[in-house]
Image (cartoon, rainbow, N blue to C red):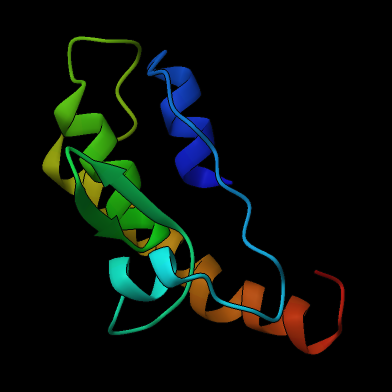
Length: 101
């Protein structure tokens, strides 16, 4: 959801391709051969993988459009990245374990 939110906040038009749970399309396997998982943003036929990295890429690529995704202050940006990683590694892991998401 994070990349879609970032693209929408920046008013970037995009085509959303839904992956079927349990199977991996050829496009996904080709676009993310290391982890073989979503999300993947294809921009100018080049893949950008991992949710947080995609958000930063969108923020930098379309910096003139919409609000910035991360604070301008380096320390505040580091704190935002810390909490995003924490949520991915701790909170999401627990939610998946409990079958909440």
